[in-house]
Length: 483
Image (cartoon, rainbow, N blue to C red; front, side, top):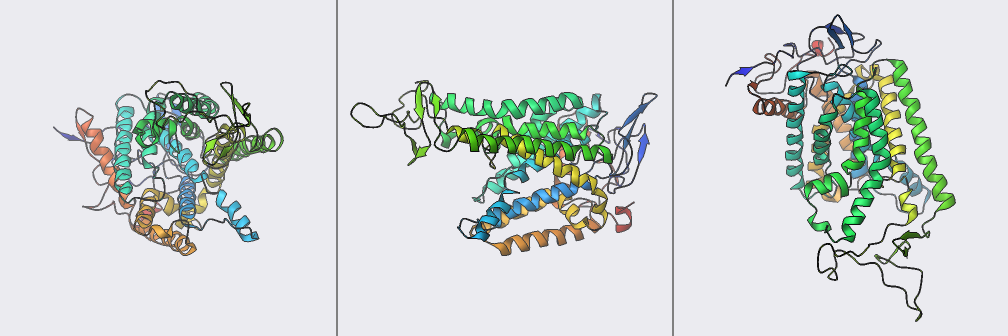
């Protein structure tokens, strides 16, 4: 079996590491590692890809603003996982609780949005690849998904006190593959539909299956957790992937479009958070009741749902059947379980996975991404360390998981850990990027994606020649890093 370099990739591997103002190239492919989520189009003025006489032009270079957004997301995860939880009654605890809620939940959403942007950039931006080139791109994305699942398995062996999101991202990547050729309009429509229907459908499916006694929490299968009942179900989070893909197919190098993203995100925040606030403070509260198949239930008390109605003897009606209890003798024995209180269905709290959280927090991620793109040029100077963290987000994320696994007492308990992890990431990643194009895990994933693409192809596909150093991540001199 021959080792071939696909004709769709340029042998030059250095064009994508700067924020060059307006690099374009007619009839020539983008940088060979364009399937690396860290390599994409350049910040700067200019339009989107264009086609002239059947020849496609695409902007080359690295979008520093996206690296800044990734950097903020991964540092937000570090903060959420290490910072002490403010649970006291003093002013500081209250203020800290408010500050904690900013990255809590939203860091994952920001990562998902930027991942969606990367998927579009990796598959041709607003001029999607076709034929063998698109097939190769999709195969390499499948390779990245396998790598993420493998890394998730390894980190899970550490018995971590936090949820590892890598497997979720792997599933989202695979789910997004059929939509990589969709137009911007279709992707925004898919994002809106998923944001509204996804959370409702997820709750409905969980309720129906639980009422039928079909799902036991301790035996959740992989896809059930990833798609429906997990902390980050695909039925909900694909809204952010679709939105990111739509953004990636737009003119994100134009300041005008970046400002539109900020405005759109702000409007969605008002709609999601404002709508939730109005509903929870006017129509619902934690004591509100919700009719479920003829049985009235209220908020949880002592671990079970108790009906406010009483029987003739003054005793409370028994709670709905628990599908995991011994009372359920057979699967498909219909016994409706209780819904959450109505107030929980309209909340916009982190990890609530409601329509209001998806719209509000999705808007936050869109606005922040637009802002990061607007200040993307700063990634070459004052924000360069933060952009470096974003360019090595997988390595930084995995490193912080290893630290959590080896020192679990630091979880939500150490300001020193927040400081040392954050500052250390900024310094180490900043220095690393002076000499290497990719972080260690980013390099391994880049190589593995080519290997998987080769396995899934008639011919083995190797990384472009001259794109890397011998036996180590690709070296790049400081001079060429900004070429």
